[in-house]
Amino acid sequence: GWREKIGMRSVAVLTLIAWAASAYRLPVTGRRLPTTALRSAVAEAPPTPLSPLTVWGNKLSDIREAQSVSRSKDYVFPRTIVKADLGDAAHDELSWVKENAMDIKDSMITHGAVVFRGFETMKTQPGFVEFYETLGMHPCLDPLHSVSARPTIEGEGGASSKKSSAVYEAVNKESRKNFFIGMHNEFVGTRAPRAAAFVCFKAAETGGEFLIADGRKIFADIDDDVMGRLYERSIRYSVMELPFFGWVDSLPSFVQGGVMGALKGLASAAINAKVDFSVELLEQRGGYDDTRLLQARAPSQPPVVKHPVSGEPTWFCNVHSHSSKLRKQRESQFGAEKVRRSGGAKL
Image 1 (cartoon, rainbow, N blue to C red):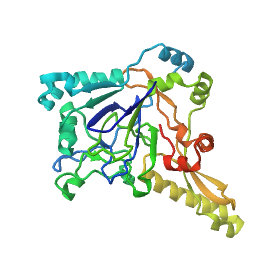
Image 2 (image 1 turned 135 degrees about the horizontal axis):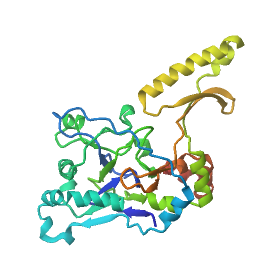
Image 3 (image 1 turned 60 degrees about the vertical axis):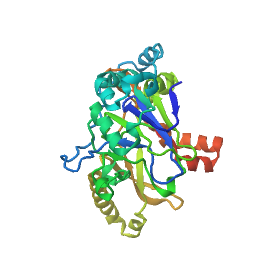
Image 4 (image 1 turned 135 degrees about the vertical axis):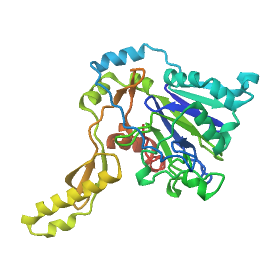
């Protein structure tokens, strides 16, 4: 299969964003959730750079042939490194990581993800930071940093450490503590970190499993005709709706168009200044009262990209999360309450 379920107890996971999708069930215990190392932990360090721009690459000339080639390959996903299997060589964990850094990073390309089990260093935030810095991973800002969707985890030094923490919490709101976050790629709008490190400092009392999936195998597994249509047409998301403009209907008809044009320009500038989505606002009507609204649509995106290093095609798309048809199918199969608690899967 293309999915791996990992119990998040004393485990760290490295994954190449372009290949591995990830998901986790949020723990029911407090705020310490699976986290990803994306920012600098040193207060004196230079400002952390933005997440890199997404590399969409060149279009595949024959998507069906590319699927056929992918199906012929025997991908091993992920690679798992168990400390107990390494013997005395890993007594000094950071020294072992340093000596094997190139092999580990090569495995991230070959296998898509590397799972570490039984290591002590990653059980604390300072140790986790030492681990990914020793490996040579370079921190960057969360793609969602401008909307503060994910706070940085509090460091052992208290609130002052939290400001400069290298480690982001998962989406962590009280209203979503029981929600299932489904398979999704770690990219937002126009930005995507090249790789990520995930860790759990405190296991959940129940649940808490971390799921990873091989985007290469997902690409190979999708029905040929469905994949062909998706790739030929590309994917465009409606990222939000602003249903606040019913009052424009009360204005004289000859000024309504100009007013909506001005409002659309202001809203578009505000949204694009806040998030790297490059959204286009389209005037629509909707809801039970057919009110005026502005619908924000992201640019068209290919559902499959070539890995920037290996050139292998991989699924890089969250369409199954956003598709209203698929959401309704999940409701009919699992019930509206379970789907609500799942929060809708993302890939």
